[in-house]
Image (cartoon, rainbow over all chains, first blue to last red; front, side, top):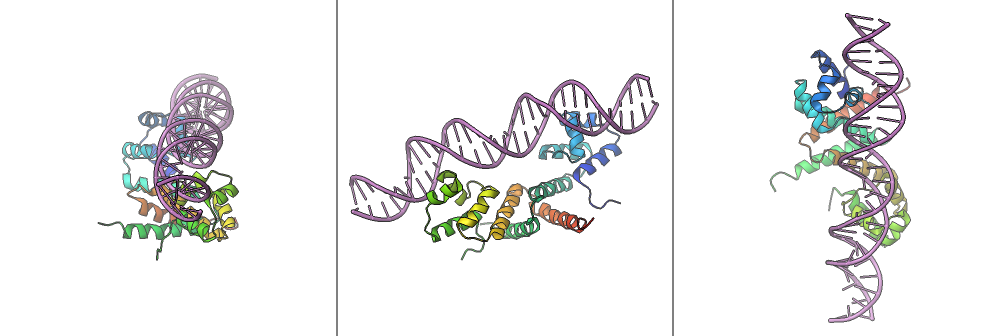
Length: 105
Length: 105
DNA sequence: AATATATTTGACATTAATTGTCAAGTTTAA
DNA sequence: TTAAACTTGACAATTAATGTCAAATATATT
């Protein structure tokens, strides 16, 4: 079994599991089927709003799907970068620092 | 002492340490001083090319500066997101997975 | 205080990236 | 073999990023 699915794969699997056609889902999203097709094959990125709607339409956990979506957006930023891994680690450090110093003050 | 400097702060500090004016550095970058001023105050993002040039102009470590730059870009993507921290962790996991499965095959 | 120089600000122009449509092509399955 | 679902690629529209310019403000010097 595939342990690391792209958000596109998740969307397609769950759409098919529900027996929905591109046409059905894209109508609800108010976009052309072509885009949804591309999103499912990772040829295009969805917008945050589309992800949230898709979670509703396909009965998926919103938070979970959003985390997947954001993580792909992050990786997209560094996909061609030698130093991507280092940058990610530093980003996490900074994130910790930010969270530490932002409570009630 | 400040333990977590923004790239803008680093750039300004080092420019001033060298006794350079915005005008001097922005000329080398071939942009208006206004932009450099904004970059140094984190009001605008630099481009990757500008960062690399700045490292040369200010005698800073290229890799180090680039990592800082990329990490800020990453954080920028999730700055308004509740789930930012989770997304970062998931991105790191995916990154590991990618690196694992990309060696010589 | 007046002036000169450096920096900042904000309105706006240009360019580049993202998001979308459409129509024709391909695949899948009756 | 034809009908429906999906894919592809050229292009249009929209939005975001990057830049200029001129005026405003701050900082220094005389």
